[in-house]
Image (cartoon, rainbow, N blue to C red; front, top):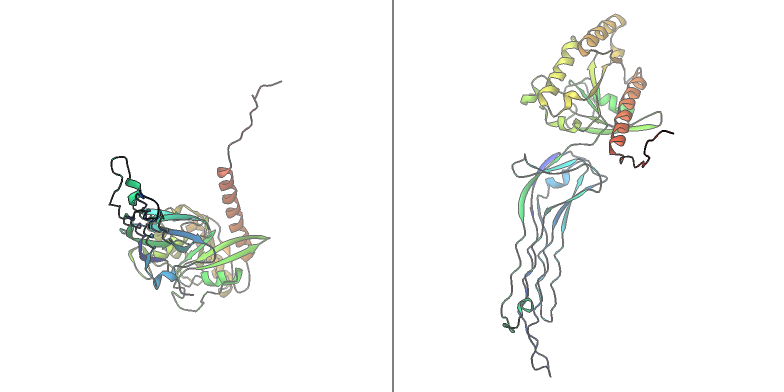
Length: 350
């Protein structure tokens, strides 16, 4: 499946139906009077987060969405039918922006959330609505109100518990393939990963979602390489796993390069909890490995995990560290969302 995380769409809600001008003309009824019905309401345009999607690729091939016009009113006080609404189905994590691509309209973070982007126009009143003691035969009705039209941007930020960051060829895709059932492209050249990948990791019976994004290089925040456009997909994560390859000549510099790009990007990514790991340790000798561990520990301010996705060394420890941070963050969220205590005790001592 192709990946698309940003697109522009045009939407238009339906116009309201026109009211009807009609009079009763029935046999044996001397004074019929007006009986024109009201017009139906135009259809709305909704957006809804649904399960089973992780890309906006559907909106690459269709960018225009229009709801139906409401039915016109008819005689015998018949109201026109309401116009059919249109629903844009998107993955959870989709944000909707105004045409300036800066003003946020809504942020759909959970499956089932809906938001009305454009309301349909109200139907016009038929001539029966204008009947009065001084105007018993009105010969006019209202047209329906026009619907709303606008252009909006859809921007997807994947929902994941943990994000993998690092330079190209740091072993991020190999790590994801080793601990999940995801099958990202893996090759021995830079920028093998061209779009984010998701996978579900399981450790000690607990599951969490991992997101792998394309590698960062120096100057990514200025558009160098693939740039930092995919960093938005780790904005919602609870923890980052920063992988530094043991094949790097200067692991400290490699670590600081990625950290600088995270800080330059902003949006709170640099403040997230971080676990550091020296990857691909199976390809260096013991002496070089020990030196790189010391250098990375000094640069990161924490002892790095020594892992190899090929041999499995250190993988369980890294996954458990991720699990513990994610579980702690979930518990904190549950406590914050819990309703306040309703204990009515006076607190008086016996």
